[in-house]
Image (cartoon, rainbow, N blue to C red; front, side, top):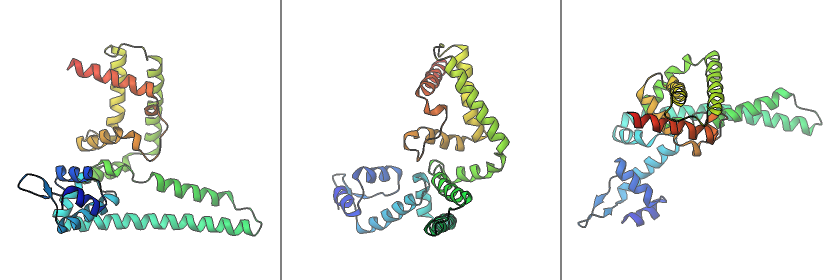
Length: 245
């Protein structure tokens, strides 16, 4: 099959097939004239790729998983357990909704705690693990290992630092991007970003990819990164810093 025929058969775009080829995920044969030629066995591999992607695995991790059965089995096992956890949480929300419906049908008012359970479970599911796709498998393990370091007290301190930074940037929006004030502010910005990574370059690479994909986040998080003036100021200061090097 040609790339167009295979794309139509598989239900994916030609662009996606080209991307998978570049990444080494799905390498078709080549005709004498150099065009991609796909065979039936390629469809099975593509189905595995699409399934793993749907389960939330990063594209960069998939080639190694497909080429090593043990790694693939381990990845699927982790995903199954994550889905089982999600099912338990969703069952809790469904039961709470059903109980609220039962009480309302009986003319009784559900307890506020019941509504709180529904909100908490659904919100948690919306926010949970959506950042995983930006990290390699080893980086995700490192992020998970660092979670115990991120205490409520540390979260509060970090939030205060972000708020202070946003205030100081707003006060100095007209400052020279290459000047000491702007450069001190961008240094504080970098330290806040790097604080989460703990100096690990692999985690930092995932963070950079995530921040570059802000438009596709599943929900917006209130913070200075949602302020175009803040982002423009930081980008100008970073560009000025790069020119100095």
